Image (cartoon, rainbow, N blue to C red; front, side, top):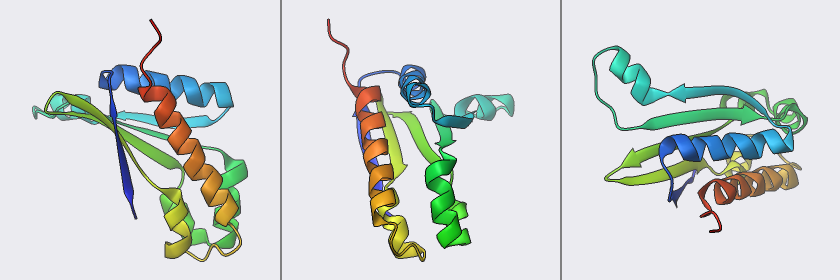
Length: 131
């Protein structure tokens, strides 16, 4: 699957917070926020800031799993936000490619809408605030 990466002008925490705000405004369920760096520190290891956000909407995901239960491996949707070499990045797998990996004939529009949503979420989270 194709991995999409976008730079963010914000910290990992701020970028994740902006993603959460955008999801909340849309009524999309946030299932988990995983702080990999914090978890690494708990066991005495170092890791640059990195968090994963897991979220979804059963109205879209259920359609995919009804067509092919194996698609449940890819759901709910996830985004990773990390800091590397002084730059914050947001990344995600493009859902449109799920149609190639699973039997999702006839659901190209749903996958496209999911991909559009992810792109809009990232744009909102990484857009510089107006002064």
